[in-house]
Amino acid sequence: MAETEATNLLRVLLQKDSEQVQAWLRMVWAEQQQVPEKFNWLGLAEVSTFRAQELANEESNESHSESLAWTEIATSVYEFLAENNPSFSERYLDSLMTLRAYMILKFGAIPENPVLDIYLIINWFFDNLHISYQEALIKAADWREALAAKNPEETQKKFDSELEDFRKLRFIKSRLRIIKYLSKSKYFLPNEELNTWISLWEKLP
Image 1 (cartoon, helix red, strand yellow):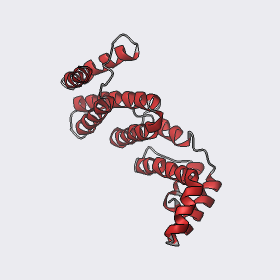
Image 2 (cartoon, rainbow, N blue to C red):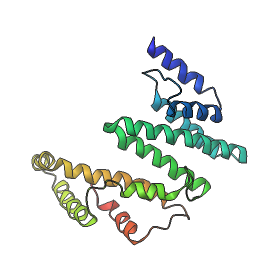
Image 3 (cartoon, rainbow, N blue to C red):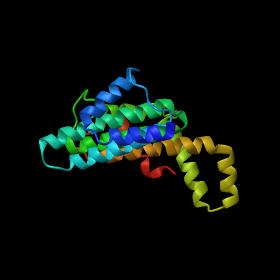
């Protein structure tokens, strides 16, 4: 019963316009609206993302306003998912920041805008890096050498003993992917520190 109720709720929400969905979310965040336990939050975020990107490619100002509204919905839900699912938080934040970068490339950067503030992406990149640039550079070179040796047994030993370091490097590369994508924007002017990190991209495993 709960699953059917959750499915029906998502279907009803996706028939509404962005303003109605935003109003529903405000009530949920304020704990004034109950949500079925098995509600498909990821489904809502993904459909909202699709609508936001589709509307962004239309010509009218009205479509662009709707696009940004659906982006706000998607980012709000992705933030909720990241906070409530620690094991998958990086995946959800990655989706959120990719969408935000897409919208900045489409509409430009606006400081303190909940969608178009470019510093929300830059600050996110530096959050929880857990490793300095110099340390990342050394470890990346070490891993490149190990992988280039094409010795499966030794590579497996390295994975077994240094898996956490490898994950940190992949974590950085994942975030740098979005920073590099954002670099297509004329509004993105990385400082020396960020440029140094960007230069690390192709050296990471």
